[in-house]
Image: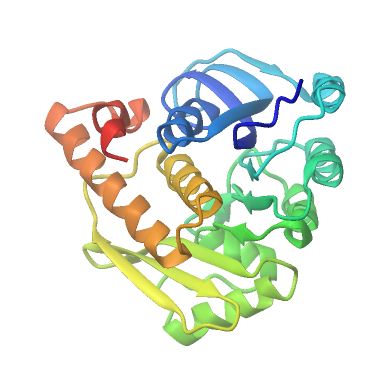
Amino acid sequence: MSHNRQRKIAVINDFCGFGRCSIAAALPIISALKLQCCPLPTAIFSDHTGFDSFFCRDFTDAMAAYMDEWAKLDLQFEGILTGFLGSPAQIALVERFFTRFARPGTFVTVDPVMGDYGKLYPTYSPALAENMGALLPYADLITPNLTEACLLTGTPYDPDPEEAFLQTLCEKLAAKGPGEIVISGIARGEDLENFVYERGKAPFLWKEHKVGPCRSGTGDVFSAILAADRVNSRPLSEAVVHASSFIAKVLRRAVALDLPLTDGLCFEEFLTEL
């Protein structure tokens, strides 16, 4: 009996029990977009690292055996989405996953979660950031923020980049593999801009008014919508508008509810609108 009669996206990321990020954000979003979400955890968190205290269990040693069981079932994926990876060993395991499960037609999205505001996250080392580049040749789409795009290309960070600078960044990234790139969350006064690059096409810019301070899991929701929309054959520019507009709506609701920033996006209230 085939397990491949329904379209599926594999999501390789950590699982967080509270705080709406990583797999806990991607799974309901992808499901709402009528695709089966199959998570491969890299770590298990009680609540994410933005809280003062949390429990964590690393899952690296179990990932290979986990993949072996999926191979026994002959699972086939229309999409693969990767998020935060905590070690060079995990990056190597993701490479192995791509080799085993990415077939012709599988749409691969890599969200290279590495840093922000011109700096690596505290848990990230320069060596780990360099290893992240090994995933780019497998990717159809990558969704870095401005910091991550600069890190992946060895480009000095510019907090207020001109369009030509962004175009050059994307061309450098595209030379490493991905034909589609979205540099997300570029601050433009009271707005946030997404720079959308598709090989062979003119760039596309989309701005949304910034709603409140940054909240955990926003990037996870953004990349999940893009990954699912592209598997569903929605054009990239439309997918970016879809994701940005949905997140802006949810952020307005989060502000109205006065939710703590650590609690993430209250997307549950709008899933039926996706």
